[in-house]
Length: 131
Image 1: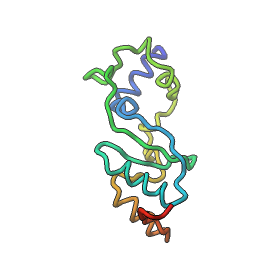
Image 2: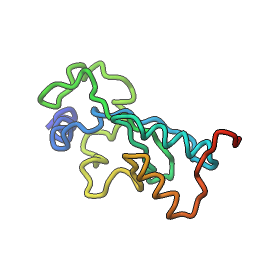
Image 3: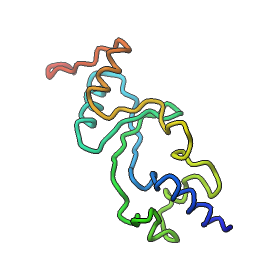
């Protein structure tokens, strides 16, 4: 079996999850304005915020790659961007194929984030007149 066939089998098994979102690292929130920014992200459709295994904070946009075919294969695979090529190499474990989720903490709504901050005892409420 070729390396590409191994990769294809891995992608088909997980439903090509890495081709269904874009995640961008953001600063770890440390003040009321930054907490408010996270809340703002989460008030948008198809946007999540998560903390990964390295404790990095990321904003995730749930959006499908325009080159993902209905059968979960890539129509431009030989010419795919480097970020796609940097996903686990063929035969390596896929972060989506693992029983553990690919994040430590996941927020899908502003309310989930607010409850998280409240459980941690963080005064997060941002007021217009505050810096």
